[in-house]
Structure formats: structure tokens, C-alpha cells
Length: 457
Image 1 (cartoon, rainbow, N blue to C red):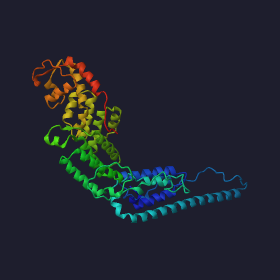
Image 2: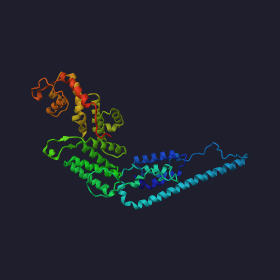
Image 3: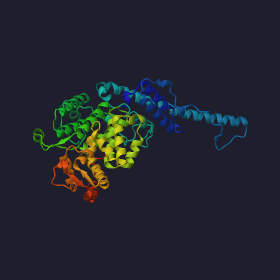
Image 4: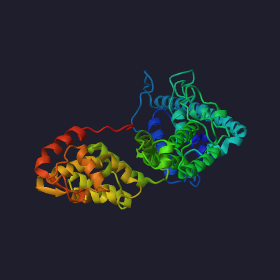
């Protein structure tokens, strides 16, 4: 958010505080100023606070020091001479400090006048600028204005450092009215006529949701979502609408289907394949948006993140992430389910794990599909050590296979389809646990020891 959208009273208060700063209290006062504004933004009281009555502790007048200062090399001997010398030196110092304050006040007055004229020129684009997240760029102006520059003749000039770009000045507001456009990676500075403004992006998002429900090709839907995300990024729009876009794209990626249109219409050769690259990009962006305080389906995607960390076997990050959850988050159904899955995996409680797999809320099962075969192999390693024989029907029910055919195919894929009665029908076949125990351990080591996660951020 640029300084144009600050409350006028806040602008005046910031200018007043900056004018009171000097070299001795600048660092402490800057830190306190940032903290006060950040706290007011978090509490959503930027426009309701009486800023004129707010006083920074670091700028509170302090009593004069009691230590004597050396005024000059020559020290008068008489009492009257000493008093006169001290008075003259003190008045000289006060005049110097006052002159510095006056120059700083004049500079901020000029800046406010420039900003006022700028507001008159860009009134037409204010609605788009306000679509940006409140608080993302709130402190940028303070950082630039407070930090003395080593470049240029005026060290107090906030624009003197050429290495610190004024991003608000370069923000683009799109003018394109096209609802749909292909995603193209930017190779040069974006042009406003190629970017869709905020209200057009909202219409595009609505149409994309309709087309996704109408079973349009995922490749086309993904291309359009990437283009939509790009336009949001270029215009620096970060708000609840941005969160909705990333959440929807993440769900589409989890539910993506690979296969030709003719295959899908005929009902054959359909393969559900999660687009992990796009999902992980959306999940990473959502994490940063949630941390900015922008509301969304935080608990739902918190649960997805826990399941993804389980898939990647990232135990250290998983424990750290779970430890940061609030008690309120842990009571949410999706988060509670993900934590239950975590406990089942850590305790090798495969019976509980596959029960949670069947009852997964939202789209958690799509993520669990990525590591459920690995956990089935681990469960088979335990079961073949505990039992001498196992019926195929028991394995199907215990490991949450949908059909006996799927169960048999899994055993063949892992080279453990060894039965005591191979000629019997599938529902009557009995697995020889003693014969397959070494094979299932070898298959587990070969297939699941390493985890590859595409697009992990």
C-alpha cells in the first residue's frame, strides 16, 4: 500500500515524529515508529486512532544530563566567566539543532505538497490501488524516508539512493478487457494494454470456476489460472481475492486429470494425476498470504501442508510446523484428521491410517494417494511377520483397496503375489506370508526409500 492511502492524520503524525528525530535517537525511534504503525494495522485501527495524541517513548523529552561537558580548550577561571561561556555554548548548540529541525520540517512539507499534487492526478486509479493488500507496503515509505542515504548531496533525501527503487511509482494498472488470455512468461517490462485490471480479473475467475465444473480440460484451466496469477502479481494485488484464486488453482491441481478428451468422454484411459508442480507453487504463495493476515481457508490448507510434509518425510519441518499450530486450529476437522494421520504413520498404526485414508475430508485423500502405496508396503511387512497366511479379501479390507483386482495388481507389481492356492478364485486366494516377507522388504527398499516431490518449494 502506497502512502497515498494513509489517513491524513497519520501522515501528519509521521512527519512530526520524523522531524523530532536526531542522530542520537533515530535508530530507536524508527523501530518504535514501525512497530506502532504495524500494531495499528494488525488491529485495523489505522483510520480510528487519534494519531495526534500518540507519543513515541523514544521521542519523549529527557531531563538534561548532570555530567559537565567540556566547552572549549580554554577554561575561564572566574565564576562569572564560566557561566557566560557555558551559556554561549549552549545557545550555539540549540541554534544548530533548531536549524536542523527547521530544514527537516521544510523538506517534509515539500514532500507532502508533491504527494497532494500526485493524488489529484491519479484519482482515477485509486480504486485499483486500494485492491492491494492493506499493510504489504505500509512500512516501505517509512524505511526509505528514515534511512539516511550515502548517495547524493542531501543525506536526508528518501529518494537519493538509486539502489532502492520506489515500487509504488512503478505499479502497473492494466487496461485489457479480455476475459481469457494464454499464459506467457514475461521477458520484458509488462505493458498496461496486455494486463487485465482488477474488475476484469474477478469476472475471469468466475468464468473459470464455471468452466471447471463443466469439465473443461485441465491443461486449459491451468494455463488460464497461471495467466490470472501473473496479472495479479504484476499489479501487486494481494487481498482476499488473490487468496481465493490460489486456493482454487491448488484444488484444481489436486483434482487434475491427465488424458485426451476422447478418452475422458469414452470413460477409458483416465488417469488421475495430481499436478504437484502447480499445487506446490500455490501452497507456497498461500503460506505467505496467510502470514500477512489475509483471511482464507487457512485450516484446510494447513491440513494439506501437514499431509505433504508426511509425503516428503520431512520430519524436522513437520514437527516445527505442527508445534506452531494454535489450539483453535487443532480443533478444526481437517487439521485434526491430518494430525491423526501423522500419529498413525509415526506409530506404524496401519489399521488407523487406512481408516483415516477412507474418511479423509476435503481433498486430503488426493495428497494421501501419493504415499499410501508406501504405507501399504510397510503394513504388509508388519503383517507378513505376524501372520502365516492372509486371505486376499482380508488384505483388501485392511489396506483400503477398492476391489480384489486392485489388490491383486498391487501384489503383482511388488512381486509378492505368492499364494498357497493360486488356482482358486480371487476371493478365496490365500497369501503365503513366509514366502513373501523377504520380497516385500526388498520391494519397499527399492521403491520407497527415496521420495521425489515435483515442484516442492
